[in-house]
Length: 261
Image 1 (cartoon, one colour):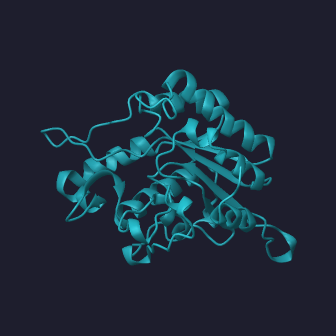
Image 2 (tube, rainbow, N blue to C red; image 1 turned 45 degrees about the horizontal axis):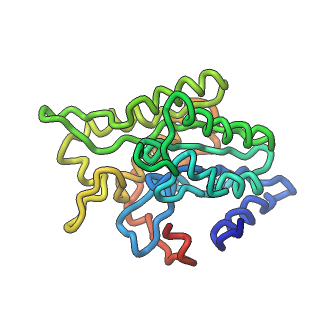
């Protein structure tokens, strides 16, 4: 598989040594469009992975390999997990969050069944990271914006979060329960306020992807869970209780067409 310029750059970043000969840890993200890097043509849509570095000290770098439209299956089948595993090093982290596209029953290139193939594909990420001395971390999928007539925030991911929780317990791997936490957050914010967090614009009403405030809020949930599960230590984290200005989010120009796929 030929690498894009972005993938080559991310792999090079992971190999940069730290002061005094010790290498920084890199947190790799394998996921879908809810986490992915967005570019200038996609603004104001924002993946939560874009906001994650705001909460991490310099010793923990982020290599965001999440890509729009991918499932746990298609990410592997396209060789994207192999790209990560070619760069990941002992002590690094691999954060895995999928389900949005695994749910697409009509698309055999992406669909997985929660209690069988979904778990089977997730095991490939766990085994790949562990075989290279890195630590895998599972994150249940962030919730969409959906409310019933009484203003109750509704779960949308079926059995996928439960299947991931069960797998994490079986494999004794850290689990970030972003599905439960984001569902509770949308409930607290309510029907109207959540529009500020999702990609609602004059021309689009998107209840899946985020605007900058939503990406920042979800990234904060992720980091809190990384602390709770002791994947990260307090010394690794900054600004967790601070207001992060949405203006900190920037959308670079795409370096090649594959960045927008």
